[in-house]
Each structure stands twice: as C-alpha cells, then as structure tokens.
Amino acid sequence: MKVSVDEEACIGCELCVTNCPEGFEMDGEVAKPKANPLPPEAEECAKQAAEDCPTDAITVE
Ligand code: F3S
Image 1: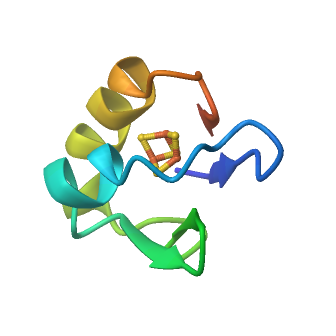
Image 2: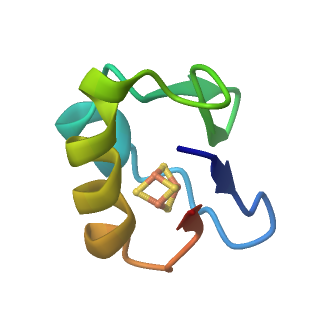
C-alpha cells in the first residue's frame, strides 16, 4: 500500500506516529511514511491514521 503525507497540510500533531508507529515517523515538523510502500502489517493502522488525521494530510492507496 502506498502512503503519502501532504507536508503543506500536516500540522505535526504526531497522532499518526502515536497510533501507527509501524507506519509513520516524524521528520522535523511533519510526519512521513516509514516506508513506501508500507509493509502489510502497517496497513490497517495507516488507514486508520489517514481517517484520524485532523487535517486529512495522509493519503493511502
Ligand atoms: Fe501530520 Fe496528520 Fe500525522 S497532521 S503528524 S499527518 S496525524
């Protein structure tokens, strides 16, 4: 699964990193995917992180 974080939209709340550490890490002020594509074991929480992101900065496909 491919995942991307819109750096313009991300406000650095770290919710995705907290809830899905397998999928995301902080890169300075913004989050970034740990890998692309993400490994299967990170897919479920990455989808949830995309739903929960307050600014809808995460796209999964
Ligand atoms: Fe940024 Fe959304 Fe994560 S604002 S830190 S991509 S939850």
